[in-house]
Length: 138
Image (tube, rainbow, N blue to C red; front, side, top):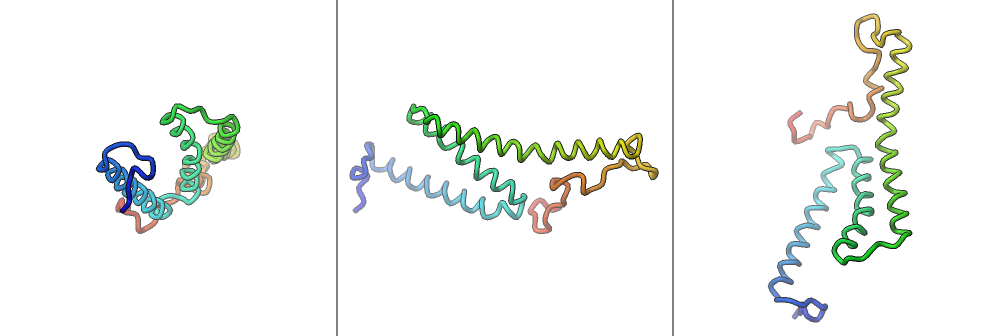
């Protein structure tokens, strides 16, 4: 028989089993969400979320156990966070530059036909329509 006390758990046995069931449900939901997410959002955004998990874990450990993470852990998290911020800002900066360049080419930012001098390819991946199997009905 599995004994909570054998693993170092101090408390009523029913709390141990509630924690085990809650953990199993949480982990299952996370894996299901990570399996479904790539169909709903670009794979790059899924990987960003997974990388954020690496950054947030030491913070949670520090909060729960009142223990400060080591310097190298904080430095590594800062490097990952800087890369993620750069990854997310690069398309925005590129979009802003392409809109400005399009305005310079056309003079006032409007082509002869009266439409803005920005094509759909200038808008980045966020302008792509969602997949046809999207549950939002679009």
